[in-house]
Length: 146
Image 1 (spheres, rainbow, N blue to C red):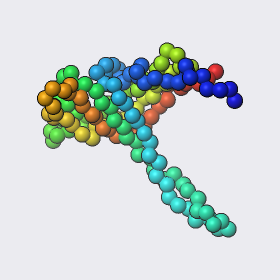
Image 2 (cartoon, rainbow, N blue to C red):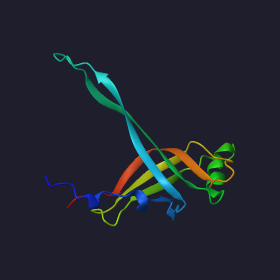
Image 3 (cartoon, helix red, strand yellow):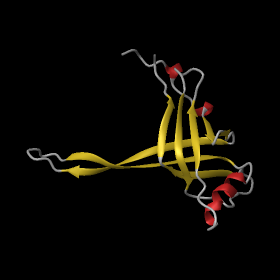
Image 4 (cartoon, rainbow, N blue to C red):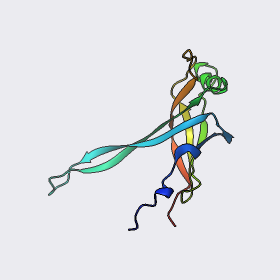
């Protein structure tokens, strides 16, 4: 195996977040994870139990600077009994000009789990954190060393 080429390590500064085709340029932090749930499986003739995936829980967070109230108002429609939940699609892109390429994933069925209705601190930039759950992921582009 060749030694690590440090210029190919990826800097998150070039990351992007897109919601339903619109670039959320004010957001600077993104995370999406899949928590796997296992059930223990007893195996005859073995001391060690096996494990079987029985569920997946997708969740994530985006955060950035508050620019408008648009996202909060859209997500808050879930609090109106006459309207449904706000569901969207997020595309996250991790890019760096010196990397071997870039990575993009599409998160499907995104629903935010917390709404910052009002939040500020005197003398500080207002930042928002938007945790969410989602129900599917599609890998659009992957980074490979070839």
